[in-house]
Image 1 (spheres, one colour):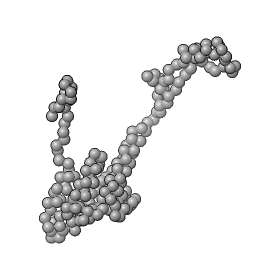
Image 2: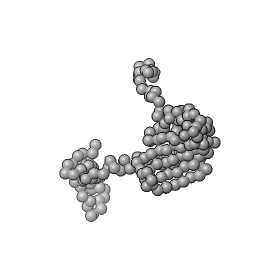
Image 3: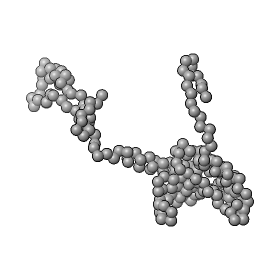
Image 4: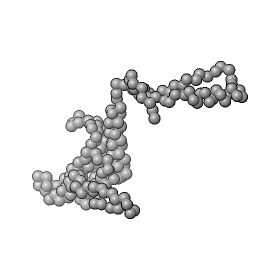
Length: 195
């Protein structure tokens, strides 16, 4: 789509109309038939679906890997993943929430936190912490280098042990200003001026 701002500045943007995989899965789960699990089970109930959609609406921008699983009794579980840690948000058929944070893989996992009678805000907070943890890990990983960078500055003027007064002081300050070198960034054996 193209829009015009003012009279002379046209701009365009792409609107992503592709269906969100998690929201599409929630819709599919809502359409499960009675007896969907070997003759037992009811589809997730509207309060559970509405709560799940609201939680995900507040977290979709994080673009974490997420999935949804139905419970036999009309409940629903949302799971958000980051590396070996996950946040499970269990939503009862009535929309009541509990949150569990786990770390590990398969049956080899450790429960980090378990919040019963949680709110939507509790669930959103735990998933945001999960995303921050993932961001910090990838951020720190990108800054591990063999060489380091440090800022140095140099001056051709050295301080005199005798205090300057009057005219000498003004000349000393002018000389210091003119002879001060710009700071440099030093990486390995290369010196690069900092602009």
